[in-house]
Image (cartoon, rainbow, N blue to C red; front, top):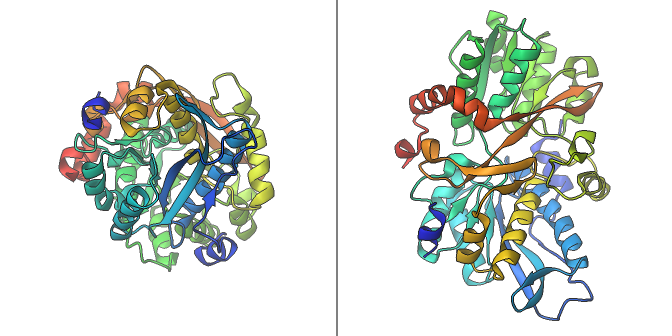
Length: 429
């Protein structure tokens, strides 16, 4: 059984208009591949709706990945080479639709692996995973628990990597002493709130108020920002707000005259934020996701193949749509492909076992399978993560920071705040 093996601004409207075709398959078999030998991979994520920016660009990235792999000969298993094809299902960030999609991808499409964004949709899918033994991935390790033995988090370690941005700010801008924070009240926002609170406490930065949690249906952010900056904080933290929130909040901060530091988990489509505010206003904006044309990604520690070329091709096909997840699902597929070829099989059990042998080749360096203290299971691949800042209108990596090193020093604070927000695995289950 797999459980025994594995246990050890761009607005929503303009985004959807520019990505009208949202359910498609990717992957053109190379001429050297035998006809009919195809491995199907499920892509189960929001392709429309408010959270589409964390789904659709990832599918677009997977299309590029599939074409590269297929052109190079495909995936080599024990009985020959296979082309790879992605089969997508738009779950609209709805748990019930995610469950329907997972069932379809497994029963009708015959996929060997399913990638998800996770979050609020995972509880709808977990019964399907338990029943079928299918291997799933999430971009949110906060989905993990001892009951999620067929779920892995091999690319993004949200929200723990957010500590690296705060740590870097504290060391490089020691004059910043106070902070406030806002977030949508949901499964993406709350664990991130707990993480930022732990990071600010570890850095000796004072929170001037309790985090401002707003309804995900909020559209008017002027009152939110007015309250946020009423105590004149040095830092405004936007947590893991969706792009539909980050853009109007940044615009309101600009309009209401905030001149301090902004830190956020993401800054998708930041060029549009600059256009709505100014280059000077966005200077120094700190977040966690680099553009892949960054020179720092050409070092020997990077395990993502040709990041600059990938970024160039993505932007050629999808101008203005590069975001936090554009590379992440493709990075997961690098790990999956290596594990399948090592095992000589695409079966979920075999791939899971091979993937978790030794260190993992995370995009930003070798990493360890970790998480028992926080998630109850070592199914998250955790290592270094970049800190990114906007300089003269362009995102640039400022440093790579070790998440395990931070946790070794401050893990008690993270657990304390996770418990306070009922985000520990035993509280969630």
